[in-house]
Image (cartoon, rainbow, N blue to C red; front, top):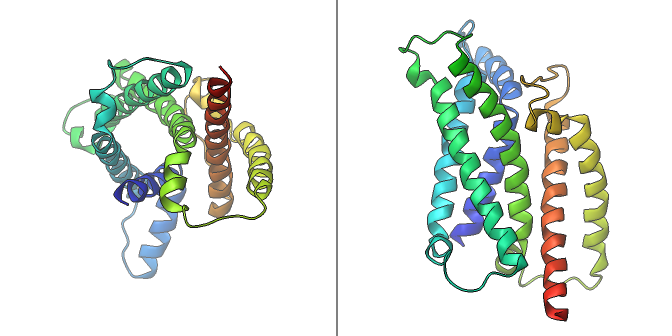
Length: 238
């Protein structure tokens, strides 16, 4: 039961991490109502750092819970399904390392180090962090879909749907909107660094942002899930 709880917690933190600039102002307003006033304090940045570190710690804990994968990576026969799963896991680990290193370079623990905002080193770290963040969001969503059968077996084994095609229709509808939201939110431009700075619409209701990002997450999770189903059917036929 621990693994699905860790996965759910990682999902929530991942969503909040992507919306940190919207959370900061909302928290400032809330604190000011209770008499706490900190002019110019970057709540969004602080929240993002804590969420980011929490996510990375949980990621490596998740990796430790699945350490059998690391122990067996050079054992056994590799079919197409195992190759895809292994490559995705390796890409995810590399991406998280990029997130960790680039995030630490920009974090407040290095405020005593005199880096200029225009320093090429810091500029590279910022760009790497933006790209790794959005690649990580997509890869983690895809990874969740590839392993959805494990999660669903643990969480929903007692639930039996009489009309089995309904979940697929719901998934298809969300996927269509998720693909639209992926384009609207310009994730590909962030992933490829066509846009190097993340822009937020502070006039937009926070819930709209979250709905779009949940739809994007479900879009890639469904892609991963249906890909693994297809590969399994192909392997059975062969």
